[in-house]
Amino acid sequence: MADVTAFYYFEPRSDTTPEIAAQAIADEETTGTWTDLTTRADYIKRLDGTVECVEPLGEGYITKIHYPTEIFEPGNIAQYLSVVAGNLFGLGRLDSVRLLDIDLPPELTAFKGPKFGIEGVRKLIGTERTLRPHVGTIIKPKVGLTPKDTAEVAYLAASGGVDFIKDDETLTNQKFCPLTERVESVMARLDEAMSETGRTILYAANVSDRADRIVERAEKAIECGANAVMVDVITCGFSAVEALSEESGINVPVHVHRTMHAAMTRSKKHGIAMRPLARLVRMAGGDQLHTGTVSGKMGNYPLELKKDNKVLTEDWFKLKSVFPVASGGLHPGKVQSELSGLGTDIILQAGGGIHGHPEGTKAGAAAMRQAVDAFMEGVSPEEYAKNHNELRIALEKWGK
Ligand code: RUB
Image 1 (cartoon, helix red, strand yellow):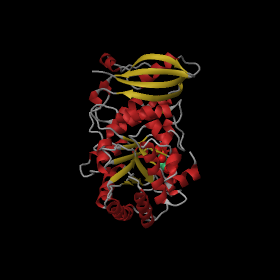
Image 2 (cartoon, protein in one colour):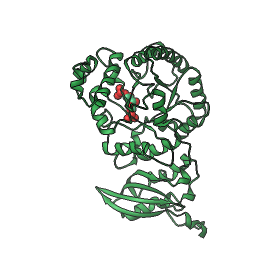
Image 3 (cartoon, protein in one colour):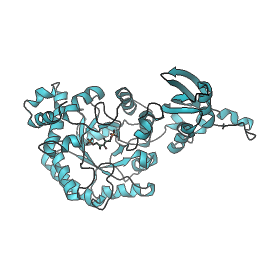
């Protein structure tokens, strides 16, 4: 049976050698602790963690640690994390440690994975032949709009050309915009937009909630017409994604937001990189996952991001691929750099970059689509803007 391999960057405490620090991780996460044990029976040795190598990198070191697969409970992502990303973050022998990636054997990746994946979502939208990037929007302001006004914004975005509309991460079921009323209103207006345009537009209602209420909430949203659901994976947990994806009654794409992720992913020295999280979301069954942008408003690491997106889209244990979502501070002027950096199997989402268009949401959505069309036709946005007013106005406001 192949081991689980985890890759870490770490910096040892000044009085500790890198080898001892790496071994402390392997010990803590397998059969050891800070002292020797009288309870350590001989037969336990096979479960010891081993350090394969420790190599210098920048101000610290890279290590590869093997954890025997037998330690893991197949199918239990929470338990996997408690080994590869558990107590080790608090160990005093290390000043910092960052989980970079994990390599799992087939026994531990036997999950159903995404129900739809990129191919399935493309089929719903009708882009399986053109293979163009999808354009999405987050209704803005984040919170505060009534259901009726939310629906109007959704209608305008859909009429302007977006493929996908989602709630923002802080909007769930507050009094000013209750979930069921919001979904009914949005879907009624989207039905109008769909019959006017002949296109399918997905609306992901944010069903993030307490563990024991998420599935019920998603079913309610679907009953009210939602044709996608959204969940915040870090605040709700990977089991929330699994529950939504595996429930047979939830036959719609699961959009996975990652609010709070940067507390773990942002530091290059300490925390958890996006890559292992992306692998786990794919196993758990997310159909679309936020992974970041190359030019947006959030801190970004383009080189890491490209490989993170590859982890979602390359062949991996027969699991369907996950649609990477680039979001945060995007507008039509950034489309070209995002698509040249990340490729066209991507959902480009813009909130402010659509609803902040001087001529309103419909024009903002049209401008985003025009910027995508320009890229697909190999024309510069400035050139394309000469005959496309919405794009011209967006570029005048935001530039590139
Ligand atoms: C985007 C927004 C999203 C972020 C999350 O709004 O608020 O929640 O994309 O970031 P806007 P990430 O388009 O107005 O900036 O995708 O990096 O997790």
